[in-house]
Length: 97
Image (cartoon, rainbow, N blue to C red; front, side, top):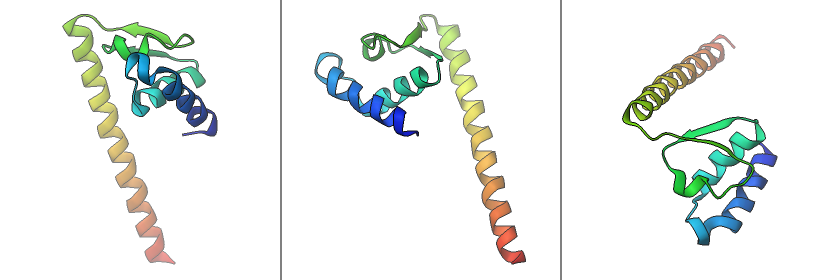
């Protein structure tokens, strides 16, 4: 997380916690999307619709939600693989030293 994302997320928590029950995790997600000029796809319209600068695509049907779930699961497995490879490489390199 960058300093800009953290700062933006803290502002969102301060501004929107009472009105829309936004939590810090949702604020970080929204801030990350805005800082990277990306559209956020979510079925959780309640928390995100109050953030004015956020480009939001609301997932309304079951198929869209399932496609997003499969995409996220694939990304999660990929990130786990990268982590395992990175740690494995670091351990291997440490043994060589």
